[in-house]
Image 1 (cartoon, one colour):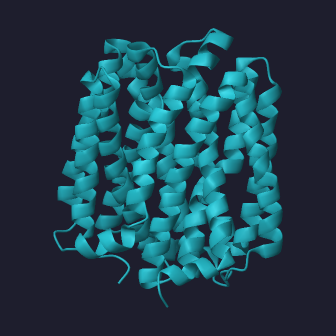
Image 2: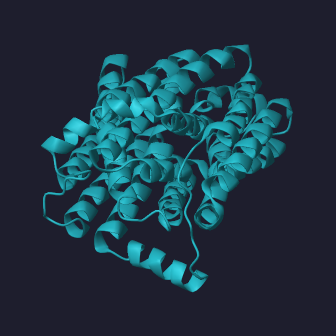
Image 3: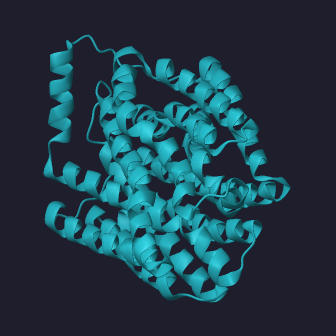
Length: 394
């Protein structure tokens, strides 16, 4: 079956929908950060709390949602998650107090905690081999299109008022109804006891390459949510006096680049082994953050953003494709939820860690920290990922 024939499978579009919703929680609101800072009279470090409150529940809840999805089925977890995401997110639109906004973001984050692992789990359940590699790339491309569209959309909506960006999460409700009626996926048949189940999960996890990939994923999201999503908008406003819509458009450039690269993962996977893909992505992060540290005009910043997007477009789907292939259907959701938990950890601690650099030395230090983290990624790749020329999806 050809790679393009996967588009005849309507389950694929439900997976895309889950991916779009999963990315909505952060990407749509960051262009409004300067407006939110002014409205609530808070500091740049405090506004990062909107990301932390949203991502924090995923660190603790994601493993449990994965276990539930393996034991009782994917829909049992996915549908309530979408409903909670939609209702709590929509409620944010009506709050006038920053701390209540954080509380609602926390509940929205509970709903979001399973989404970024369930979409990848479903890809693993429904597709195999080269088809899976292609679908993983397509899904990463959709993710990047969302990351491109949401900042631009959020920036435009924020012109009317920052509150209106929280109307978007209500779209999760009709998607939840669609999952109930239309998703046709193989459900795991876990009849083994919990001890045997956890033994299989641990056996899947406890490999040097897996640990290396988990560490790399954690660092990627420290950089993405710390240096880039939190402090890149502030850098554009401080250095160039950018408006919210200009911030959104500039951030979209990175995501458009990522989408284009990710959509070609099937071809890239034939040219580069896993280790070279990881080295390429990490090197791109390193170069891009160093440029962002000193850039002072749109042309140079745009170049940095494109380089960042090239690296991101290769490394994210490559890691996901490798990870999902390690586990069978009976323990895949728990395994991928661990990966999602690590991802959430990076999302949560990225703004906090980079915020310390920012507090000490300003914007330059926020991007220098990203470059240092990218260098650490390269060390992890060379020390924990084998020298063999991995090619996933074969």
